[in-house]
Image 1 (cartoon, rainbow, N blue to C red):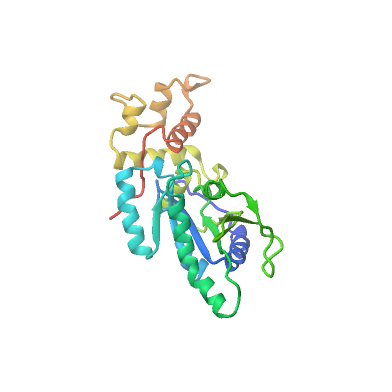
Image 2: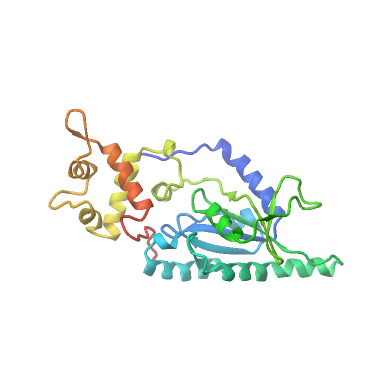
Length: 279
């Protein structure tokens, strides 16, 4: 197995910045990818956010297996003791549900401030998650109808910008990126499948081969049928030949093939797939 590598020198700095952001908010919205709901959750999230209330959004649910999403919603809710909502950036029908929950989660903090003699204020919220799970899309979805920048908060920081979503919710307009401190290679490969890891960190052909093997175990014949392989095995070479992706010397262009297969998955052309298996 080819290993996927990160740059650990950046992790401590990224964590420090993220903790500074978390310290100034009341509620955390954690975004995970519905196609790999377990693999895209940060194992040490509780340590990172301390006792901050958390709402979990299973994003990109429009690209995931709907039956599996229902099962994962319950599993994650039971294990995390958090509210979990399946969502997608392209659909706003759950917007009020998300905002109502955020307001509810933030109320104890506002009440505590009022007991100290302070005036009530909006709940301060930030969106966190692994790279490329759709944090910016969720932020854009939340601020779609309310783009009023409220600027820096007095006594908080001069650098952070806030957006007033409604009279009860202020949103930090930059996403908190959870650094990829991950030693589990199976999880690493799944993060690569959904483009959570930059291609500089892995060999695209090795990742795609692992992707094909993973899909074949969960959805037998899906790849074979999609790429119209009849008796051939589902290898990069055979798919490249079938698609006529050939390089000089009449050899199959396996790198181009791997990039196209992963892109077909990431854009939903292969179908609605969930690649984490629950027990």
